[in-house]
Length: 271
Image 1: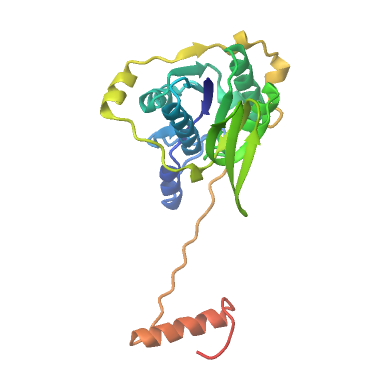
Image 2: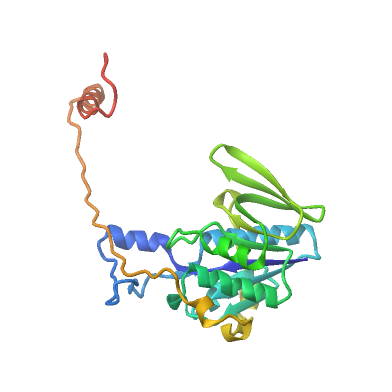
């Protein structure tokens, strides 16, 4: 049983947020890319949870094989991390994401999955932490002619298919899929496992198998971007802090309530 996990390298969201708060995040001359070289890159957190979901299936069934695929020139570190977590195979699609949109990336991933023998289950993170679009899994499912189940917090084998528990605003929703499928994993799955030092050392010697996009049979038109990002900007953050005066805690509490009522943040009434 083959499970494929699609992983993406992103800038560390916490580091990006810190740079924004400090007013130090820099956008390059192209107006689209972040140029702060000191910001670390890592596996998208949702994709890491998708890998954890695959490894849990492997823990319960030794016949499960977990392959991880990533696209881009800088994916070596995250693929070694995937190997350290327990992935059986690691694969690198040698394409530049900067020249592709979500549609082209989904087609590339779908073509690779199909050409490499298919999969009984394809797992993706629900979205990427840098653009938060969540489009690639849908395009990938369409390319493979497979059903798509989104925002899963649990995936388990059920007969010839899968039982997926979705995390929805109204509570859990259980979905039965009686065939191969693409499933997106959300953070409700729980924390991914931490690689042991022994596995990290072994993973350092692993080399991902590189796949050239030209070998996947996609035309230039199929890979041409339909959506092009023209610019990105850093928001200006303005902090505003006001101290509540008062000689005692009771006086400060009363002053706070009075101010909240004045600003209509809470309803009026007796204190």
